[in-house]
Length: 287
Image (cartoon, rainbow, N blue to C red; front, side, top):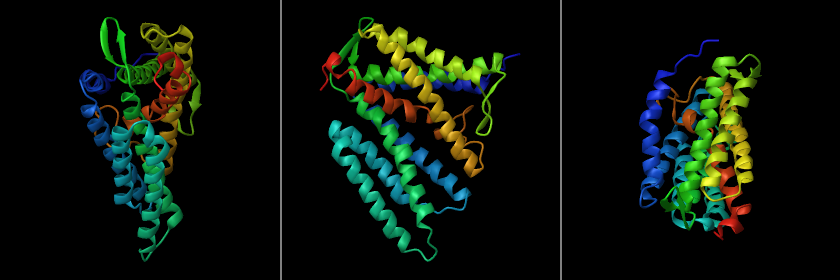
């Protein structure tokens, strides 16, 4: 089977990847946090636009405010944000959403409030793990370059996710025959899924030893990110299928909208973060 060359995807990668690396390894975490904040707000806007196309009326201002507060809390409060501030933001979002919905003449609280809260969690809560991960204390030297410990793990998260996406795409284009989930995404194949998983595992198995960690953590993190990257992709496909749209937007050439590009990261970032603070905390001496 002849493999198609995704020109716009490649051009986007040529521009986007160096920019992401610069933001991750910036001297302070502020540029990265600002970028994630903008991405999360734009992603939430896309999500609520999608809801309106299926007749729902999300409380957009409340949801987007909650998303912004999730990011601010992750930037300013670190570990505390996950145990105290984040639940407080979520609680306030539910209260405000119910108050706003009850003030409407035509009410549909299950759909409108449910979608509002879900959108804030799906976009804001999940992506904010990147910021908390980036702010992890400590330094680490890899290949004679010393940077913040969190920067290396954020970079690992992106690399594994990109490798999975790229491996799945090209493997599926080259040898894909058996459909993975035709009811959700007809172009995805089992062969592509295996190629994506292998891509993620290979990257993790190369990176983890360079970070001074035992090799087997590379296998585990590679499998974890390789599986969840594709679960995140399929999850967004399910949402788009329910809404009846192909893409959430056109902001990222070759990919679609913000959510179309970051759907996998929404799942892999929390997975890497919790693996680090639960499994690697003693090895890295971070808590």
